[in-house]
Length: 87
Image (cartoon, rainbow, N blue to C red; front, top):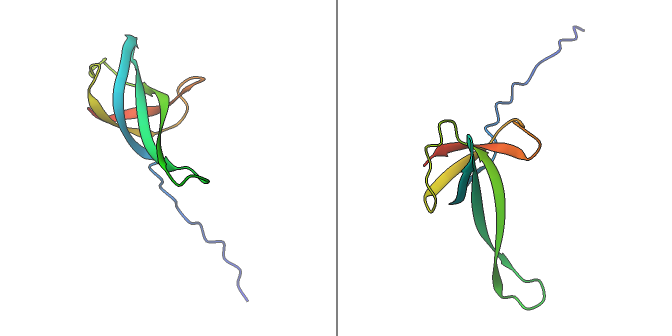
């Protein structure tokens, strides 16, 4: 009975979210507001929930008000763990 150790390669790209750029005041960093709809558990009415993420933007290519896609990546700083996919 031979025991072989098999390795499973998992290449995860991370979450991909879409949102709106709300701030470009930092160097190589933008702030993106991601909006989602959540049903209230008691009243069954949909509510908008917004969360802001700090996103790495090399070269400061995105502008305020622009719709962008962001992807989860390794932590680049204390609060920045997303990168710009397309803008």
